[in-house]
Image (cartoon, rainbow, N blue to C red; front, side):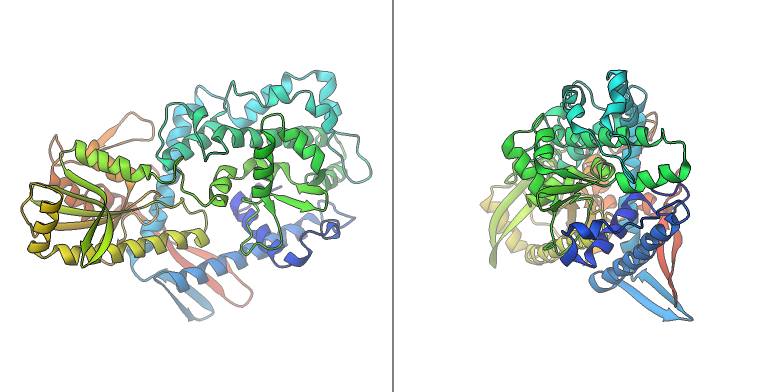
Length: 524
């Protein structure tokens, strides 16, 4: 239960709790570790537990900044009991912050478009519960026994067909599917057909999350019937995380998953004490002997689609051997009149593979495409940063070789391109996620694929309400100069970066304060 006035988000609390779990992984799978909630738990003692999470959150923030200083181009300076952390180049932190802002804005656009015609997940769950027999709703939870209530799964089973129906998706569920669809570059018209990999459709995981959202809602309803505030509070703390035996868990999942799917998803989402990096939003199940410890609210609010992707170590594409993002970028370049080579090998002193090389109006472009997940933490951000730096080295090597007109002639002749050698050579790193767009990695601009495609395809942006469109082409049709301006930090990328306003995030520790210099974008 997150305090309504807390400055921490659900993700912050999950990270803080994950850190606490990681402090004693050796006892992680022992039942006694989870039975030590104070017997006198009451609203008066609740702040003590929250205080532990706040302290853990401060430590996590400190470790995140430490990672930035060690793994990115950030500096740290200490003076007058203040530790100040900032990016050495403003464009680095700006590009990271802009990426998160853009992702949030895109989600707001989807919510705006879908909300008027679809229910939220809370409304959908309420509709499902209202369709259940009134005399049965109370029977989903056993009467309180001492300090906790128990969920009655035997009564729950008979209504699984109503709960796991594919006939509707709530706004929240549709947005999860659309996020995956767009980030994976599948862009299908039928969200229900989206595949994460050969084993799971997106819909499988959405239904999985819905089941536990309904369990959590039913338990909340039952707890709220208790009039005594202290007793109600104690029941909530002691009942919202509970054990479920393996047979019961498998039976629930068998209503909408095959046995092979069940084994894979349970294994994927189960945390054990061998994990080097613990994040309970990716591993929300804990196995305690023959039972599992679960928190339905955690399961229903975690990004389990992403957890499945990461476990299988593959990109968002249904077919890993095909980079759908690269394919879409190359297709739009061709449609705009570029001569395009994609994913080709050619000996440039040594044989190297180049993602995209294209030519138009006397300008040669070399692009490296990097398809990594949208990072949800500094730990994951480091992966994207590593890929970008690798791409920068690859581009600099190719650009140096192609700067010799004789080498250009060899390459053009080999691939039968009707081009004349040029001194106008441009490079860029095109990324699947929105992080680092606007940053220059070793003189190579980083740009996000969806935005890149938009620049050459339509040259305009749509407002959040979907009613206004702003053009950033110089003329009515695309010109090569529009792309060059965009890559040289002009056009829409400059406008967005210039709108970011400096901010300082303060983290107070016992002996000193941490001041992290960042940026925010005021939404009009």
